[in-house]
Image 1 (cartoon, rainbow, N blue to C red):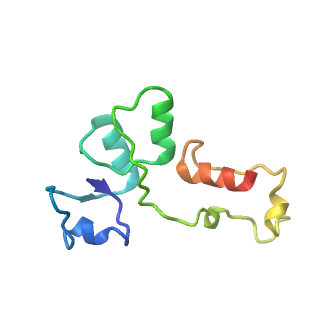
Image 2 (tube, rainbow, N blue to C red):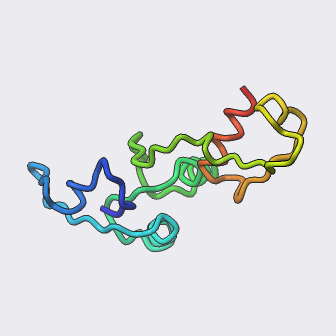
Length: 119
């Protein structure tokens, strides 16, 4: 199983906690490497994969995997919005009608952020 180093699954990843009934080997890597190696090489039986990437692959019929609704990355996504300290945006309502940049359209954090801003 390939995942990133998250504090809430660290005991499982380090082997301090062993699941019953399966032989589990955990790899801890950067998410970019995990996603690339799983999508293009299917190197593991179980892998962390972004919601954005996995649903995109499913929508194109290009998903040789089964999705489980388990999301180990748990981040308060609103903490990813940055504004200029001396700019015109002072509160969330000031973002209405503004252009907002995201690193990648299908990136899960960007999907969450766009949804949060829209609603």
